[in-house]
Image 1: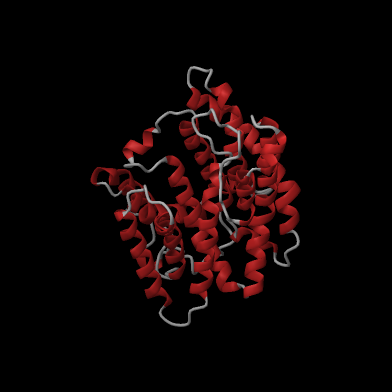
Image 2: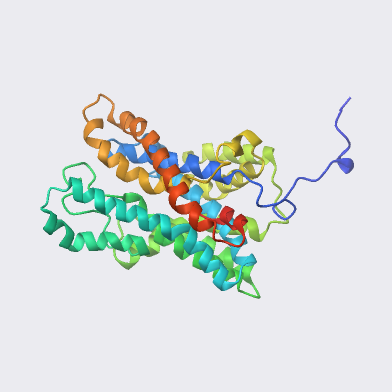
Length: 357
């Protein structure tokens, strides 16, 4: 005899429209994603090929982790955009992103001055140094610093910063859609589908304006998926069995060459469903603060500083993240306690912190 109640008496599966969207495990998911970016970068920084890139047809663990960031932001930033006025929305986004980014850029430049091969005067007056400072205001004219890491396999001082201007652009898209009175869902579907089509037709070697078009399209597949999940929040149930089925199909997707597209659809659903159904112990990992942003900001330069030591070991791609992760966690905690938390504490609504990158 089936012990379960008949279908008519069972509670319907929760949806984003029926749950408290602030009660989630996204902070821990973002921390895991930031750690995955660190692991992925270890391969490139030590001149080794990442195994997942062959499986995913050029899609690395790092790009999938960045995709996870964008799915989460697409959902949460859209919620924030709909619930906030213009000034409040801009203040919230600026307070969440800019203080920690500004401090990180200054720290990178200061540390660069200590390890550069150039004379101090030449380093501080270099246009490359000035260009790197532009990262603090989302104008990345350079990700390298003069004479810093120049002899290493990858010469960037902080290669992770490239995603932030695109993140801000997606924030603007969320805000614009939230202000539309008619046809927003249809227009969002068109924009999201266009990003998928465009991404299939770019080679990855674009430069100039086309580089920004290609990157925006690539990332909006994920960000737009988060927006769509919220747009249709009353119609999409958050079911564990559906999430598991989505992950199973995602694992099969490389066979037919649609891994990135499957990640932006099936993976996006599984990620959101898992975060809202995550057990308490999972959420408790980051209960005292969201350190994922600081981990993301500082991982790359810390790894670069450890590359010379890593290359002297038998397995550099493994040594590098093993050494860098504890130091990066410490940097993330420090960034949260000394910078991020202080600015977020100035908000009138502290729960808005949950809607940040």
